[in-house]
Image (cartoon, rainbow, N blue to C red; front, side):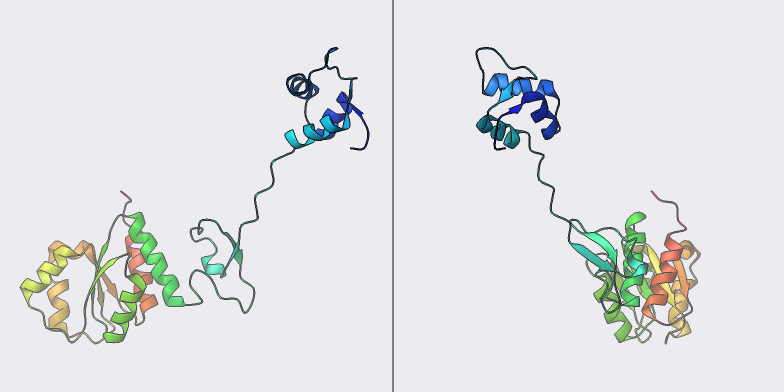
Length: 216
């Protein structure tokens, strides 16, 4: 300000109550006659009042996190704001991978229901490697590929260990192996039959099954 201003006008300009400004003036710049709404406030004191009552600076805008439509409602990464990715921009959540998106949904379902152990019966080395890469650090996973040897004792121990057992019937899986895991009534509630190939298909079916369970 370039010249003195009445206290009431200064309070209005600062967007504060007159009483708040007068109280501050009495404490910070007392005068013999006391401060009143009609008092003129010198430029230097008005400048100090501006600094004192200036609104706090706005926080910087959150960095944008581009996401595909399928991932837009996924949990937000702290310190970011999800936005719909434009064409040509990779999704920060799934990176455009159907398999990764399905794996993230599976991880979320396991977390929601407090289950952590997945046993997959069937599949080949390639799918086993991808499943481990996608789920590692979030879900404890064991995989019995279609060429593995198992006996009844081993199968029963793995069934007891697992929270969920996915039997990948559409892959190379000898009947003598699969029946070790499917013929025991005690563990029927854990079983999910996956009749389609592909990591995403397995993740989707297991997710759907787990989500039918009551939450703890």
